[in-house]
Image 1 (cartoon, rainbow, N blue to C red):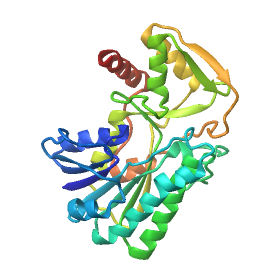
Image 2: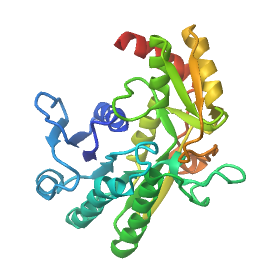
Image 3: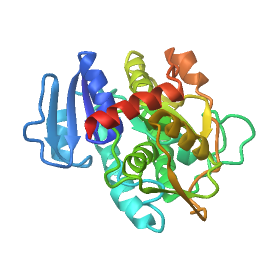
Image 4: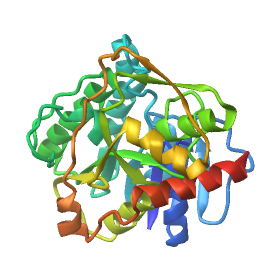
Length: 305
């Protein structure tokens, strides 16, 4: 299949691009930075934004799938900047929707965020039908796009898939300008720097290994898409930030210096996710235990330094 990937340069986009290339798909990857020397077998990189009409017409008119990973903020970086969330993320996505009519029948897969759109006062595990109540502008932005996609699908019949991953981690993830807890902790272990925790460290997160996440997309693309469908993509087991720190100390053989700060108001206290819909519809489930995934990631981190 020919697949257009938006946001292919980010961690999640890179994971899925690598996996789908191994599956033999032809990929067109839109990235914001210069692309000279990046092209490889079955993968062509194009310097363009997701709302670049000319690039979409030139490279995506005959695509079989559009995968939308592009997003410019995190829960923390979006704090106090609702206009940035709207201008950098929402408007480009809405302009993309205006071009989708040129690709009739080509499913759009939007990567949302399980960790940012659900309410943290749920009883039991969050399913795709659980109440949604984001605390961050990042989560509100993701949910806004989801709502527009529902309206777009209702008006046009265009096939839409919404993917809500939990906290994806693994080899290849770096800190750069966006906060990512696992590589940030590993950097603190290596350098002896202080790791800052907002709150008491008892907030829980679901950590999904990179290979499990990319396996989901391999399964998804095997299915014919109709209407609109939403999937939680999660390991279905939670770990507090304090316990995550302890696990990494055991794996690395080093101790962390921790500083506890007041809660910043954008983070959920903890939500457990139900990913049984992905198992039932796509025969997908996460198989990597947290200790195993963290060990593989730590080994990669040491080799990459």
